[in-house]
Length: 239
Ligand code: F6R
Image 1 (tube, rainbow, N blue to C red):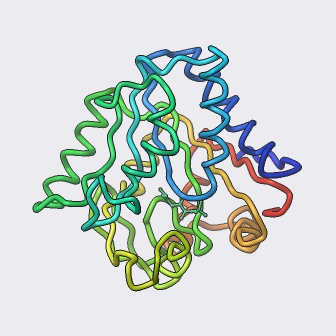
Image 2: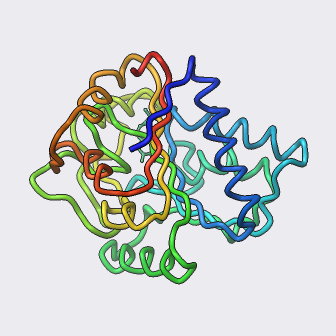
């Protein structure tokens, strides 16, 4: 695991956007794995700036998002489809049909999860996966537990995730209790992974992650120690 510590959130976001843009320049058909949440917002803003300065072209880029709340459709302002359109996709030249986000409204989540993983496989797999980390160590919505899902599937969100994400909702009761998420196996298949962490609230979990000497499903991000191309970009507040 390579670790880069930046002065602040802005520098973390710039560093991440620089890497994404470089990888797109190397491979215009790149497949990106993308997160939502507060952490990557600055990176998306920097990528939009680069696009506006003609420094990056998203015409052939394909994306797969990590997760979506069960029960929210893409028109719901709290859905991750809405977030991605508003925060990023609507501001760059990526064809909408190249962007994929798990569908939180599907009737058959098991069959759908398999199909989502198959779609990723058919595109050649994820070249560059960007991740955030939960204060409980989750990546995507793979919550600490005795076992973790391998492929994309429906999971129950933990109390701590519901509490942290309630900041985006009118009330905690509005936060969905379930999500459809890429599994640890889907994430570990990515050729290159960047994990972003920012702020005091991530300090404790980052300390655990970077100093752990064993992997455990109770700290899902620890599985990343088994991948051979992971770069952590974190700001000083999270260090
Ligand atoms: C979101 C996701 C989550 C977040 C994590 C951190 O798509 O997969 O794992 O990355 O909960 O969220 P923030 O960035 O809001 O602290």
